Length: 115
Image 1 (cartoon, rainbow, N blue to C red):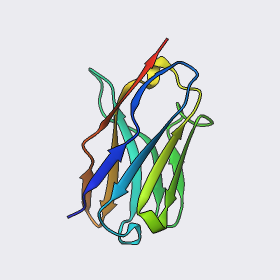
Image 2 (image 1 turned 90 degrees about the vertical axis):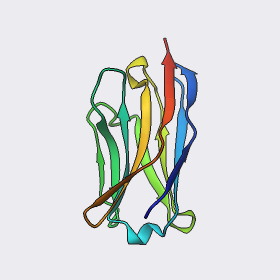
Image 3 (image 1 turned 120 degrees about the horizontal axis):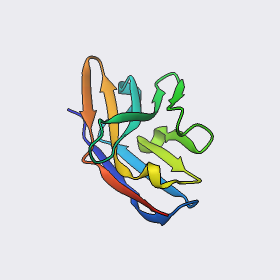
């Protein structure tokens, strides 16, 4: 079992920045990949960014150039630095970890961007 604990959400004005953190209960090296997804009201959950064990990174087109995913292997933590935030970025952000064929999810953290 993998537990994921997220932090860092909040309310900011458009153009502002936030950094999300996701701490895993296991070594990152036992996971195939970690990433961030988001879900806005009435919408499906969508990929934001992922980073694989080999450090391959993937971003949604809507966040490229504004968001940066990174990880601290020693802390078993993945970060999502979000800059130039827009009201459309408002959503609950979920941390995800993949190990084998299993997916694990955090509890979600609310990000609200005011215009």
